[in-house]
Image 1 (cartoon, rainbow, N blue to C red):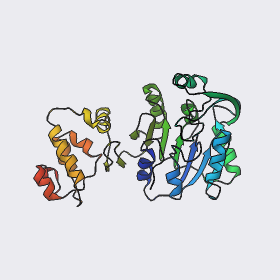
Image 2: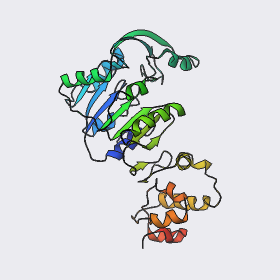
Image 3: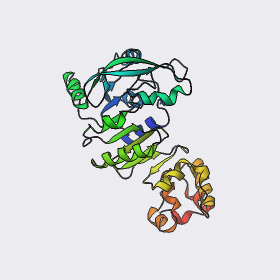
Image 4: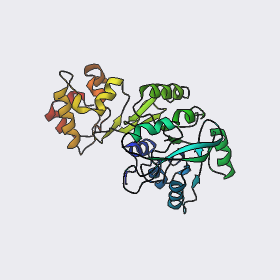
Length: 306
């Protein structure tokens, strides 16, 4: 199935939910296709509520989903309170016919883009608080609560997040743009609802979920397994080329070769691994499906369940 999101977000999210079909909420959905974290789930049969305030982007969004009764499109922004607000709308960012991808309610957000030639037009849009957004959603008899929420509101994401009761939400994708202060604020709020595990991190987004172990896809290797990472391990998972801890490089190379040539499932004995080599916590982000013979040849058969 085609990937739509900016990085691997929709791949991670789709893999996390598997065959489950639930309800999703997207704030800042744009045209519904360009860099969408929602479309893959919608194509898999999910119900969706999609908010987008840009006139042109919303028109494209409505057209995309006009024949899908399970998708509700609403032309509002979300903010700290209901009202009419100034909106700084961008033009084409990717230069491929896209529209309004960088649009924001926060004037300061435009400054970093204007320095690289992006242009913004000031308009007025209608915005809803989250409680009023729920009221609007209920008018249309849409399914609640939401199993997955994605927030892409260009500087207003945390304001929106802190209005949401995440008790019934299984996973959240939210923009933080590599701002560690924003990340900490997001994680502190999510932790109140038991959402304390990052299952994916790109430069722009965090994908956060409740479970401590899941199947995920690593950013660089495109392979699967169970994962719970420390900060160091997260850095190593997303920056393989920087992995320089003495004594681990040779084993890492062996594992990567095994992953590439695997054709028979054979489980790793993680209890033994954890007491012998910390590096294998990172390997939990990779698919442990490979032949016993290949493992023996690589000299790591002691880590396999016999």
